[in-house]
Length: 101
Image (tube, rainbow, N blue to C red):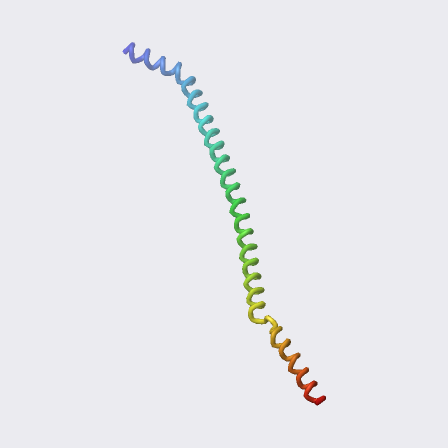
């Protein structure tokens, strides 16, 4: 029984030291987990900022393209017929010269 009692005495004497080591290891692991979590959160926040800028630029691009299409449609459908006005000016002159003769 003396071996068993000696073993128990060794465990009792080493237990507080082992307990403190385990406690420090747990604190270190928690600290490292918090650091990793903070780094991940910073990366996520940075990616979010980039996504916001991409969305803003995409909206501006869509608006610009819509304005361009509207302008081109307006120019195509509503372009003035300058040649028709030019030809009609000469028609008025022909009538003027016919009256004089």
